[in-house]
Image (cartoon, rainbow, N blue to C red):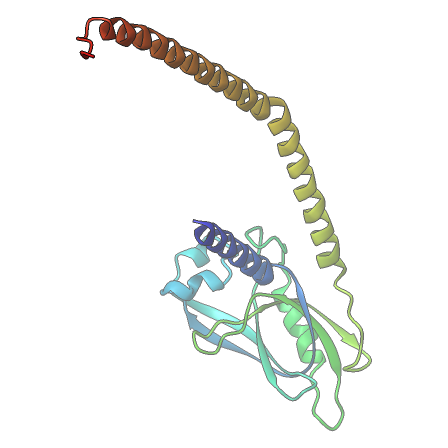
Length: 224
């Protein structure tokens, strides 16, 4: 049973951690090498990894999506999609897809004369099922060794920790005031019932003992 409980909590932790890792903003230092637009099919289960910024996109089987091609400092390629999030989840409230694509075009460079940029995005890149992280911001930086401090994520986890601490304190107070007294009263009632049961058992033993003693007087005594 203990292993089942640990497995359950581990599964909850993995699901919640994956949700946060997908949703929270991440920052990549890259060199933008190109942009393009491509028609994407949205009629399978992977459609949940694509944005639905308006009502019309929720009914379309396919639509044009803009992409940003880049190369990381280690030489590995990285491709981002560029879609509005609108007012839907995740709450980035992104409406500037065209402007972001223009900024990406302006930052294009080659390996001989590189221009480095930080792309803020959410989501995952998976080549097997063709999903792409969604770029939500671009800004130029001086070089690939720039230090990026994820302030939003830091504040978010501090806030999440404070909320968890508050909920734990509320639960502890609720348990102390409402649950523990009930358990204590139930324990006292059970002890009282157990004590009465022991007393009744002792009385029954006394009664049966006297009956057995009385019956013994009617038995035939052995001859000497």
